[in-house]
Image (cartoon, rainbow, N blue to C red):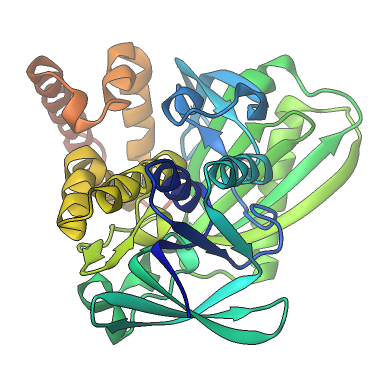
Length: 407
């Protein structure tokens, strides 16, 4: 049977970062990736927060656009702008592929077309069974530690995952659909400087988050809805949103090609337990996604770094990993889920929050920081802003029916 110190399931930002940094530290590392080409099937707008490439030592060449402007659109279609960073955009093919190549360069072994099937504990090792899709055979590999980084489609609910299992995981899943829109000429200049996030309701009253992210040769235009929505209805919603974006940003341009992508993302609470014995879980599979904007790439890569560090230290691995996650971003993500549910109950609240953020530039700056990075003065500032927002919403008119987006 094959064996290694660290076995990683999934080669996205979480898995690739863990592989690269563990291998660099001298840990024998194997990655199982189900796709033939890393990143080829990832559906994501791929917006990267300011400083991402520097934080994870990645080449700036994978960045398509630097985007200093954030455009937030409320339920009635009103726009509020903020400036930060700047952020960056890429594609998951380039991002994941680059990160995987760097991991392999450090000595990690990446096995593609390897589909995880089962996990069991055996003495001081974990035994993983996987399907080798190239040969059609089942294989086993033993590892001292296993890091699951398999994204939103994670199926970690059987008894073999112990306390990591989360009975209501599926309640947090978001159905998404995205177009890659290629044009015969560039869109309006502002499109390439802006990350757009739109918060409104579907025709049947369900909360939606939609986006427009610029790329080097196309615009990524998509939306997501909590839970399931049939394909025809979801496609119709995206078509209506795309038409609205087209009128603002590329009216008169001809669309030369549209690529359609669909996937599941996550927008609920994170797993309470992210490490049990020899098994760790990170990235979106752990629920490490900001529910207010769908950002999860930074948290995924950071969780991979924490996993690699814990495994390299060789003792109290689960405890070290869990503590690092809790100290860095777990509280922020929990608070963002609560905020999102509060906003969704009354869509008019989006406008009040966005107006407050646009009028208070320091608020966006402080919100970008992690809890552990904020000074006492900054924390007090956030509490005052939260009270101000709550007071504004309490004085607002009574709840009404959801507001659909403007045509």
